[in-house]
Image 1: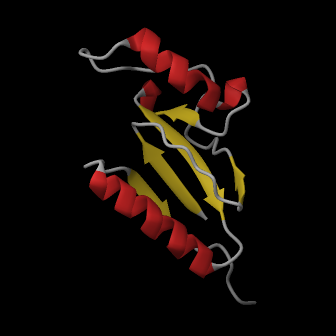
Image 2: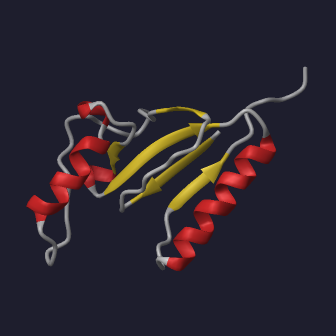
Length: 107
């Protein structure tokens, strides 16, 4: 399982099973934009991504971040996804807060 907190939106076209994270998110939070941004334009892009509107992302950290939980069938698929995302983040000089947790332990 990988959880990603990010303050920018991202499209994901993976074929994995994924679900929205709700542990630290709240559907009644309002998005917080930087002072030099255009809130109306950003809201147009953000709104369809949010769980409340049928999307897979939830606002977190008081509306300052986006959060989504991804689940993959194998560790290799998880690693491939994290590598691909990290390369895109490097190109865009973006530094999301994320974690990778293995939730399958042998009996």
